[in-house]
Length: 183
View 1: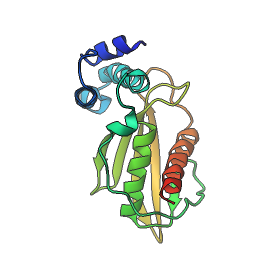
View 2 (view 1 turned 30 degrees about the horizontal axis):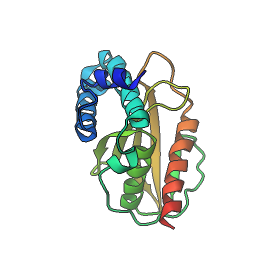
View 3 (view 1 turned 60 degrees about the vertical axis):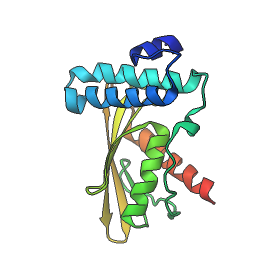
């Protein structure tokens, strides 16, 4: 997909500023997300995600890191603990700290599309290399002294999603990278 094709998918052109294009992308993503539009929205969501990825990589304006709204930096959290399940990340830290940091990590690997702080849920739409667009749902809960991040993955296209362990490892690496940046 070329830059002009990606802009057309989002109903924009090269004269539109990036903030407007990003807002349009997010609006369309919410409107066509399969949770809202049903199965018919999956194809449109995949096209929107691919278009935004092309725009982020090739647009002749400031790169994605300058497009993000500054967020308060979450306090450093201890390193993740191994769990017996490949779809769970365990962290010996308060739930709110883990939630904030995982939201940043999820946004860095995809496009954060839903946040529910009260119930500890976040969703990101991502397209791992070589795989279809997917929805990663992370539910965060306290278990004893640890906070657990339980992950579920669903393909938004006709092809199967990647193995959950690969995507959880990607999220965990993004989390670790954020921790390294703060040191």
